[in-house]
Image (cartoon, rainbow, N blue to C red):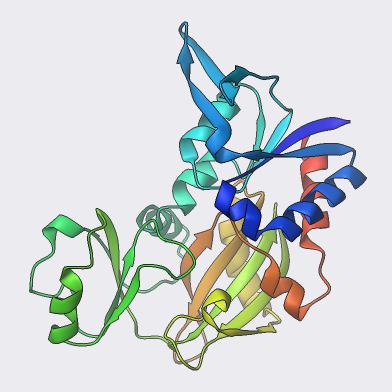
Length: 284
């Protein structure tokens, strides 16, 4: 039986207990002994000029694989260097947890996206970086956090004091606000797509009160999404798109540590089984 770590932060492990149980159960069906390991208990570094990984201050046998469900590019990179198979790989973690870097990479694929500026917070002034309205995001935020819709000069001046993050992106918002599409991907396979909507917020995130329905991709949309999939070594991710006024998809971001709640709400897709099967196949 293969050994594996399922790495979560302590707070996220409490919130995602049912998902963790689901993962361990599906992993067992693939002859993978998946053990929850808290991120806070892992210590990495260089000891005696050798890469080191300890748990609770004690040396430990490394697993054959680790599913990293927290955002820590360096942890993924170090475990990879020590011979552990990491899902998602460190490169995916590095790129997809920085919205500016993600847009830079996706631009190479000729996938349509909104006008997007990469800006350091310290360089912001009272002069807006583009015409109103626009959206400002912390380049490293997730789940709709630290995302602001700016409609006029008063709002821009007000939010200048809130934008303390060092890395920001500023985007045009000439789209259907309160609506987006999430495409769930395992490896090179599209598992399903969910259209998210909100009647009360310009963000459509399910956790922020949005609703969700199953969405059937067109052949043209699948072709565009497969451009992205082919470019990366994904394990399990969510690729998010905004929707313009003509119904066309515009790339928005890639969720590295993606949840599956909305997919389960609108379909009978067992994405965790797909993921564990994919991982098992990658080990051989």
